[in-house]
Length: 168
Image (cartoon, rainbow, N blue to C red; front, side, top):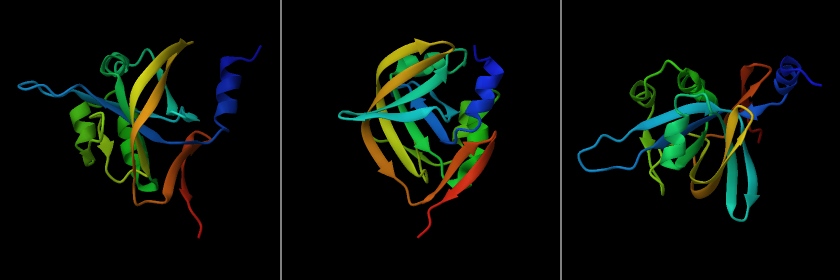
């Protein structure tokens, strides 16, 4: 049997893109739109027909119910210069308004916040959610994509951030 710590140590050797996952409640006249987000590296492509990716989220997160209720999310793949934003959204102490105030945001098809300057953003509708262990795996159909100007990515490997630069 593999121990939890042995598994976590091994996973630290699996580099992954750093993403800020965002959602927003539907806009209603007279009501303030609720936005929230979290940092995740557990994101990957599932299929290109229909375009679908998965996002894993810990069910114990205070933000979990909001994502499940809203049914939409945006995977914002961070560029090399957005490490501070990753740390802000990774903190459970942050107020959503404070975190969102540190960057510029727009929307695409679903209304989920799309980060200006992200390497790429995948605007998604949650098609299915499956609980596995401590996490929910959201299967997300991509409704819109926006590519950014940066070709320098940010990955998490060996319990630390590393910048990835595309060579000519």
